[in-house]
Image (cartoon, rainbow, N blue to C red; front, side):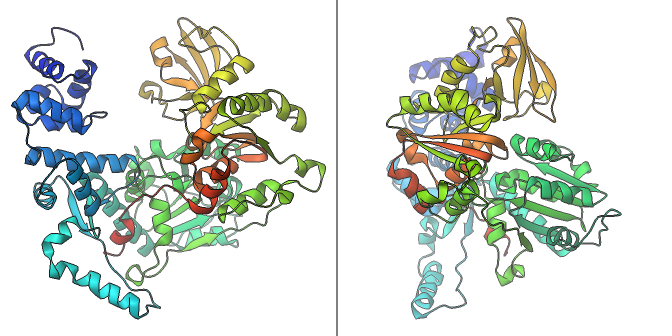
Length: 579
């Protein structure tokens, strides 16, 4: 922080220094809480838990400085802790958290009366509470009936116990309202479809187009970019969008107009003017974006949500597409209309994806292929440690794959489960730059010819996180980047170039929606604990012709595919749809 920032800043700096906090935290606190940050901290020092990166232990230390003492059950502390716990859960994808989990965390934070703390947080609006419905299956046996009756009677026997029960769901207002809004919009659209005509010459004979024309909300799995592009061109007043830059590029290559759903949502009037809205890569739409998109669609319009629920979940909280697919209760009128486009495997690559999707790895013989082309579709490259994984990945991109299947290194995308680690994308990009485009990094580490990705949005240029491109000019005074279609050339100042990262290697999540002729997936031992079936499938489905798996994860890869569909997220959209 700069010195001489006035009394407010001076007080805050003094407290933070006494609490042993880094000086830079002060700027972050003022950015989050505003100009009166010091006054807010004086009244409630635990309010700093709203600041990204501040942990409860740091807030407690600050409270001891500001107040002279701290009590674990101070309601200001317990409310802030509950809010912090729910924000942490949201960062991991969950829109709600069981009250039992919150109570357990409060106990570990030395809160003596977790039940009272939860009741106080609900009373003061820090958290909203919902009862998770208990229902019987159509084939309920005697044991299930008894368990249902026991759970149903719990709140009657001990209402206070429900405050810390796993059946009580706590949520922040932001996510609760988003799920409620999405539920209401889905119900409205499903109930109000109006007749829509296809363009002259377009046929309503195929299942996808017919379903889109008939239903207000249709869920689609298995559709290719080409099929979705054709669907968009079949109707005179249709919008096609994807929430992923890779998806926008893939759909653009399929020959149709497409927009980024993150940009589209800022223009609700444009959404409201469309009679057919097609949302591709729907599994990547988080609950807040999804609610805003669905709310903007006019009564009588037709929405098609197309995606792959078995691959990566959204970066933000919620599971909009998966939750809508799982709705089948009579309270909602049964299942939402859906179209499942199935395809038989045509070679080792599609056979591998099909096997992983169903929770297993195929026998090695199935990946070997029967002709010269298919023999090269899937290659497993075993490695013993992370350094070897990086070395082999670079070798595959620069030499082996271009020589074997006749594509350039620029048509090969490397992916890894995470950015960090000895074989994460940071390490991979460093090695790939040295081999593919060595240079001095004349502008913030970048040279002409570097592949880049936007890591931090650049609003002044309309660039969102995840956009990729190639540096066409690099000088100390700035960069020129030619971003991938449908974007174009952008001039960046040196300080703006700090928002970029190298992109020869992307995380699996960053690459979603994209398609490349060849993909190298690096799974080393260090990344093994993070693997899920969704991550593995998300990497496989990026490749259209060739996949090389640099495999150092051992048995963990198979175990993830067999036993870990994805990291658990807890949501209540399915319950909201039945309210």
